[in-house]
Length: 117
Image (cartoon, rainbow, N blue to C red; front, side, top):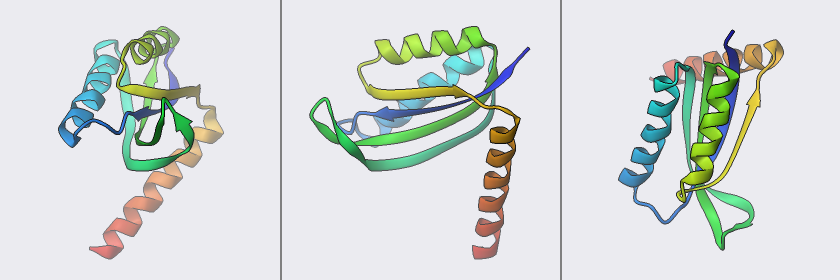
């Protein structure tokens, strides 16, 4: 049975935009190759960190929402640990309330985009 997960990871700020996109694509492809199914993906851009990590005060934040087996999450976190471009990551299993909230949040942002257009 597939559970729904949300992963936020921070990519080091010393990379170019192309390198950041390649890094994100690497992990997106990894999840899909392992049988995961993407629900949502967001690029939050360059943001200031709450405290310095590896002497860096900013980082590129990315969010993945996906459905997968628990074994995929373990493999994904191993990949995050092995990649020196990732300075932090956090994955958690979403319950039905968190998934419903996420869906409402996505729909709300789509409505706002349509109003602006």
